[in-house]
Length: 335
Picture (cartoon, rainbow, N blue to C red):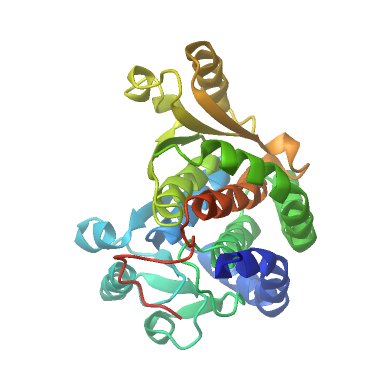
């Protein structure tokens, strides 16, 4: 049986290609505008928040740009977000997420220039933001966010890396973004089978720990929060790799599933140490290495690793008799 999420995984290359075709020049203009600001806020909730984490962490490797990440209501209640000469990029798949809409309005009240990245062309956030980037994912029904996640993350990278940073790295990232549609298609085709086997192996486990550093922490957050818990209905917890020794080290024991996302970032020294200890303890480790999937710049790791993870979650849900795109309690506005 195939669920709607299956088709949406396959639609990702086209969504990336169409978004680049329609929005690339516009994103370059936005990047020029944001170069003027002393502070930049990246705001979102759920999968959208995870894209903000990854994009900020990636830029932190090459730039000292003052960027802060907030979830919607945390920004709304923060008393220090009225900084003059500031811009905010607000991410929402539907453009109707209540927390993010509230943050958009508060930013406007504080004279913060606002840009919305959304997949819905007639939403509230488009009507109220100063500027907008519309991802071309088409209607998305599965709750996880596949094509909306990857196009949204691409837009953040395109804007932020067009803005500033090391020239060599910036050129590499922007070049890799151009190749994303074809790279994503290749990954979709070559990673399904291996993750069917992994999902079969882990189908009876009920809790997963998800670890990553740098931009991969944002992916670990998405993996736990919206993929395992919303899609596969499994308990999950995201952690920075450096935090393994605070908490998880006391729960890592034989048979405990731990997902490691590794891209050889400086913080991944702790990822590798954690893997070594977990091997000694006999945990059920799932290790996703960037180098096994792509030769893109390391900062592009979330784009490469999310594809095999989507297949893993899809089949994990399937083998437990669940539709990975369905919801039970989430009152999210659907497209």
